[in-house]
Amino acid sequence: MRDVDRVTVEEVGLQLLSMMENAGRNLAGQVLRRNAENVVIYAGNGGNGGGGLVAARHLSNRDIDVSVVLDRDSSDLDGVAATQHEVVDAMNVAVTRDPAELDAFDAADVAVDALVGYGLSGSLRGEAAELVPAVESAETVVSLDVPSGLDASTGETPGPAVTPDTVVTLALPKTGLKILDATIVLADIAIPPVVYQRLDIPYRHPFAGEYCVELRGG
Ligand SMILES: NC(=O)C1=CN([C@@H]2O[C@H](COP(=O)(O)OP(=O)(O)OC[C@H]3O[C@@H](n4cnc5c(N)ncnc54)[C@H](O)[C@@H]3O)[C@@H](O)[C@H]2O)[C@@H](O)CC1
Ligand SMILES: [K+]
Image 1: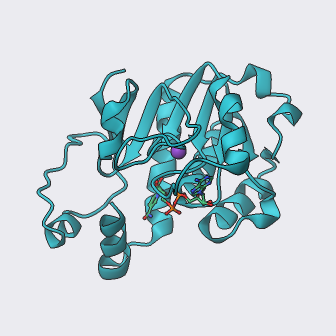
Image 2 (image 1 turned 60 degrees about the horizontal axis):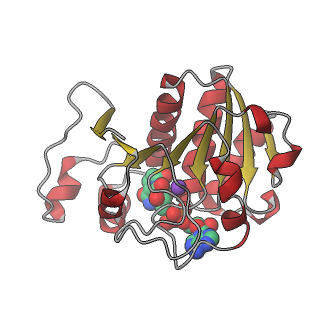
């Protein structure tokens, strides 16, 4: 997946922010399907957190009561996560580090887990690890790409990890998801077939007339 992302950006010229927009919009679409009224997005400082923040924007645009919990101070975000945070902040979406501060916390019917994706290194640590119980306290937990704390390749959880009801995984299903009981939804982030050809990955798109397809029920 890292190679797919690299070839898409460096050789084909599709920007990371475009793929992230597709990721976050598809994620928001999956949340909207659950008729959620009150959503808390847990976001970290990488591509995964950036996708979560895009979803926060789309949900807020649809009048969903959405709040964001970050695993660090917003001034410590950088790159794409900082860019996406700037937008939701300008929209007056509530952003905090402490879920207990949120009026909406107890009422959250969906928690979106966008703390860490395939960039996990070692055991989930620090504030991201401490937020796992808060994420899991929501009625429904939707993880972006892979559950935070789970190794995307092996499925191993060397430390704390989120146990989601649904995973919205991007472009290709990650091998580590095989061990989960969760519903797995594959979302199209608009990677062109030429990328898979260049990497010798046999690929035929599975999306038919949709942008998301359920690969496996929970
Ligand atoms: N790279 C791409 O082209 C795209 C990536 N996307 C998303 O971005 C993710 C990959 O992005 P990144 O490579 O930035 O990585 P991630 O966002 O998966 O992870 C990096 C973040 O996790 C933290 N982290 C890593 N190990 C940790 C640990 N053990 N404990 C606590 N925090 C830890 C890092 O400090 C950093 O904040 C994918 O899973 C996917 O969700 C999508 O947004 C769209 C396109
Ligand atoms: K995640």
